Length: 115
Image (cartoon, rainbow, N blue to C red; front, side):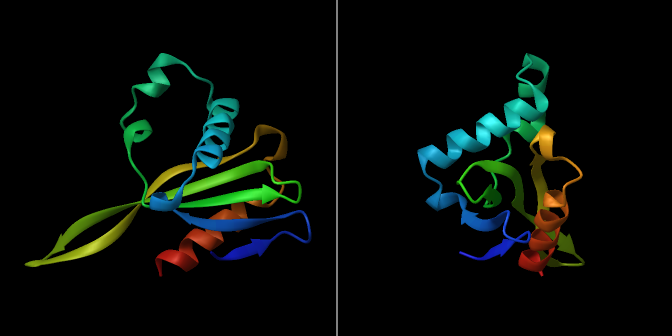
């Protein structure tokens, strides 16, 4: 697990989907609902059903999940060669903390990871 903090406010932890526990899964779901609502049309979107391979979770010092980003592993074709590519999954910061720098830290960590 890698961690990166925003000046003592919290940190980003990289979590493989295969190690995601129920408690963290529930916290991420609560964050998504708080940010986007739980309308049926949202649940029907194709991206809602994508299964990420890796998640980036921002927690404050008390352990509250305030930001989340994920990547979905895909395969692309260049010429005759298949290559691995990363697709963007759910990217969210708690509505009360938008423009706080959490999203920037998450995005930087995602880019570092996929490189």
